[in-house]
Image (cartoon, rainbow, N blue to C red):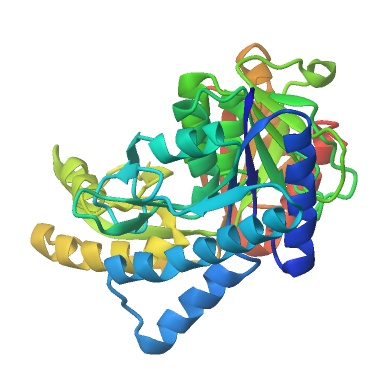
Length: 403
């Protein structure tokens, strides 16, 4: 039998009725002759609710204990789904990440998958059972539960598809596929029939919340086709592939928005070799990802260095910099939470000129100032004020004729 891995997000299993509908969908595929491995997220807002509970105890919970806490959400949903499938007279069994042999490193809350044995999954499939796996989690060498970061159930699904040599990985969500931008911001955003791994990876990294970026990295590395589709209808979604048919040969495929970043500026840093290396090494070794970096031209022997970090890591990064700036005798630290990142993504940018100018024109026409700019081979990002975020997306989306 062909192996199909399906992943259902939190909105797809938000309550009992939705769990029953997912069970019916899974059973329909089982009757078509597929061997099914189903990965589930926690019900609805369960993860956020658990985080809120922890915050009532402490503002600085131990990372290990957060993993113990947050992993329970997926265990609830996978057990309930297994019960719902069994009620439809199809045999099913639920497993935690540890039970199916998802081995990770020791970095709590952001663990990376090292290996998947999958022996218990294969045994259950051979017995004719539908296998339900709790997403977002694994176990490290110390047998401690670890979690894979926000959106980690996507990574669980893609990694299992690779380990089991599945024919396809389907990602079910509350939207019908990947759009040219967030349909909640631009009502005439267009669903893409297909998109490349590179484009989807850029879009996920730059704020598109359809899939976790790390899951796309794994899919690209092992060439695992992914079908992103809605759990609420039977419509075809968007295929994520190595190569995709470009919609009308558009230069860019999408516009993304990320409101969950912050900017840190360190003033009066000595302008001499090695300082920047030490600064960003200090941040990296503490597990904080840095994105856009700008260093001003030195005119007095010192310079200002600005960089962006995920909003969730702002306090940690600022604390590290307060210690570091004392060592190098730099000036004050300025934080800015009132920023957003608007980006354009598309492989067509490689062969077309004037793309950046067109994006900047779209922002200028709405009198939106740009604080920072960063580029890659297939993307351009601008850091702007958060209040202008949605206006910027609409203007850029219209400018490139994506609607």
